[in-house]
Length: 471
Image (cartoon, rainbow, N blue to C red; front, side, top):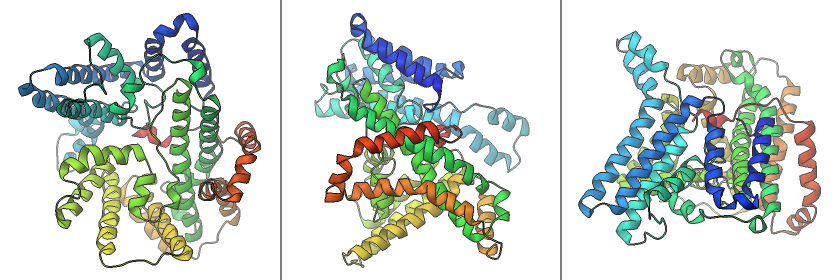
């Protein structure tokens, strides 16, 4: 069920009304769990069993991490982590591993069987949330702070874990929520405590980014597919790649803004996932602004346990490369994603090394150049997201190099730039928020949201699935 569908709006309205019905107030958590199961199983009910398996594994293991004897806690944590990663590996990475080995002569029948395994929606997201629960329970018990995630009876813990993992706003494409931030919020909610206007603004912005910007841009960036890109000029190819950079931001940021806004309607605050990433002045700054819930998860549960930057420079750089390559593979079961992660890892390592020898002057001009450079490099890297086959990526780069003399369709360029303009205005509004112009924008924000609603109704593109649904 897509956020940008009428069936979802009906589902959301009914769930919201039942949730705040006075005589059902004490069943709010159960209602959200039921609604989340319905949401997840709407198109493929059979995949609900995998979600239930993940919930059961993490409920039992986290319960035992708190209640087992000290000698068994680490073993229980290890069992839970292995179970989570095994489910993720089998359903997401088995086809990649099989296809890799088939290139060296393994059985085609076995490869066909593995390739037929369906990729469950959101498995990367809810698996990481399950791991968060296990690690947080272990760390909190070791630190003597079990009250953050209170575990009394197992039935109560099972209900809370089910809500944490299956909560429908963030269930399929995030943001990834950490257990120690979500569990304290689980309680009965009252409508008078909900900031309806804040939720409304967030949801409208999300729908505008998704339906007006991303869904219209996808019809333009369609021509980046193989073999079409071979027949366009260098200028058009650069423009389309720039357009996809705007599209993927609008699509994913739009989804998470909708998710955050909907969660607020039910009294839950989710992690912020984007902080205007296209004004980043460095690659480390970009990863503090892009997919914040994933980058902070990788930092807390992978980078720091590996040693972070506490060791020597060489070890720090190795840790960064490991994290970025695994982060790339998290996005998709294809080696192109690993190369994308490695590319970002190299950029981060190079940035760290150069910072030891070069001190850039602070000026508006230099800052502007840094923002432009980061945006260009990040946009170039998105090639690996848009064109999944490595040989096609090489062919795309060759087309960019060789198609300089092909005539340019300036109407197509104008369409991409026009659709991209609101995203740049969105970033600029953030930069000037404390200036007099920002105050003026805030004064007339009602008109601004009215205009966005108008475009959502009358200028939405053809509805498409969210890009991050494939992860």
